[in-house]
Amino acid sequence: MPPDRPTQQSLRKHILPFAIAPLIVQFAIAAPLAVIAEASLSFLGLGTQPPSPSLGLIISDAQQYFYQSSSGIVFPVVTVALLVLCLTLIADGLQDMIDPRRQAAMA
Image (spheres, helix red, strand yellow):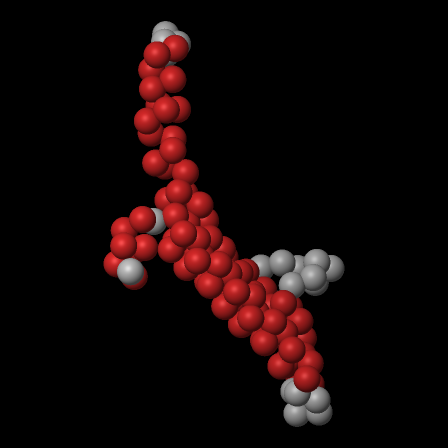
């Protein structure tokens, strides 16, 4: 039995506007965790395989040359750290912008 039109309209009007903001913030919070998980698994050899580019694979490959030239491992590690930092700051900014309770607490 398909749902009737007033129920769908009610869901769109009353529930969807309140559900969008937490979903956006949750996605922004989960993005840095996904980056760290992918890089960690690729570093261990359990993630992406060698034809595909991955920061974890670059770090893993550069590990054997660390004593000859540290730049091969430093740049990918700094890239992962900056990417996670930027995504975390974006998530925090989105949460501050969307959540009115946090705006009231900051004022």
